[in-house]
Amino acid sequence: MKASELRGKDQAALTTELNDLLKAQFGLRMQIATQQLNNTSQIKKVRRDIARVKTVMNLKEDK
Image (cartoon, rainbow, N blue to C red; front, side, top):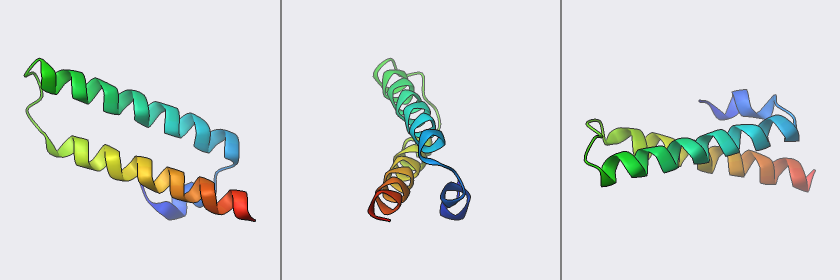
């Protein structure tokens, strides 16, 4: 997901996107705990996407 895509969304869409990413992160953490996750790079991608969404949300709040 790119930041330019996120900038085009409104605050409600960003909130739902953030909730979806947080649920995905939780699922990945559970897969690690049960040793079912093969591709551990997914965690890094989800963490960065969460950071991108939060950054865009903070930028939109300031405006």
